[in-house]
Image (cartoon, rainbow, N blue to C red; front, side, top):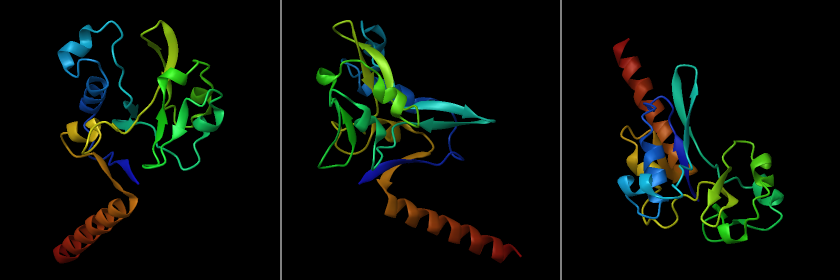
Length: 170
């Protein structure tokens, strides 16, 4: 399964990922239209500040998701095809047990159209064909969407390039 990886050294804390996420989850699918909506879409990724830098944080789509276990209405489920943890608003009763169960704070309560509470979380932009909106919007490539094997391979390559370039300098 592909997942979102973050290289915090590359993050500028520009919030482009948050804007792209909120826009893609809005009814209008445009930034200006999203701002004017009665129930504005909220970003499902949040740039949190730690020390002097920011770190984009969203649902980790856990292998053993505690939020799914806590969901009494079965609104949260694991997609069999992708392994992503998804949410069905129509089944959500707004009890927020999933909010309490998530160790990352990635599930949030929000008001939905019929003036009721439901939750919101990253859905990996399942309706987009190539990659989640946050990864496409990141100007530095700090947020990537790939398999863990590809991420590990890229990190090994980066390490070897750095190692060989420093050994040539000495």
